[in-house]
Length: 147
Image (tube, rainbow, N blue to C red):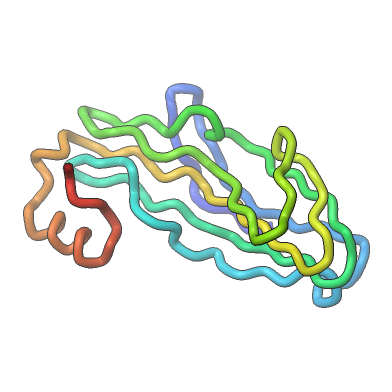
């Protein structure tokens, strides 16, 4: 199991973990990619929130049952002291992979699915962010240009 540092929200502490369990040797059953940074942080602030992580899984030679649990699926981690909220967890589907029902379902051989963790909330008012840091974040595609 891989565990990342805890996230804090008004509901308490949220620990993000990634576990793959199988009855067969994992090199025959699943192949994993990541974790990798997943797009832009949604938690604007003087100090922006942490970026989401993506973990992709492709089933190799059987049908696999999947369940994605945890918190932050419906409510994003809060921003603090004027910072904006982060992003919620989500599931991404490979081509032909059936949609899950309540984050539970089956993935067949050759299909892929990914979990994307919640992005952290920002700290402090976004307009107080150092301009050089904001420009670097834009250049590295960690944030989007405000509209």
